[in-house]
Length: 65
View 1: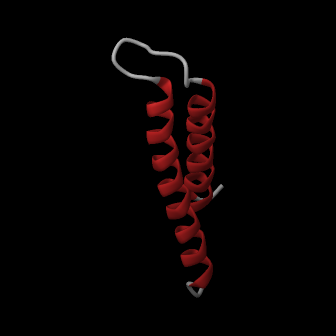
View 2 (view 1 turned 120 degrees about the vertical axis):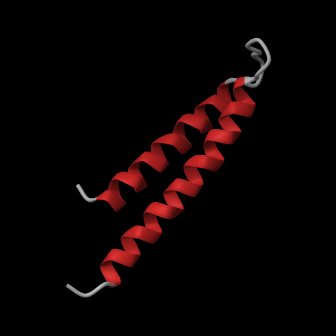
């Protein structure tokens, strides 16, 4: 598996994990943090990583040879 696909899949997995925390952690509170806020941060990071994976995939397809 190429590096671009690994980045894309890792970003998607991070986004889905963050989405699960955001959806199911709204009523919980662990010490200082709430799972919904951590989920939102993971969703943003996963989205950025996914976009970077898409960029790397498109960029590697456009390069000759």
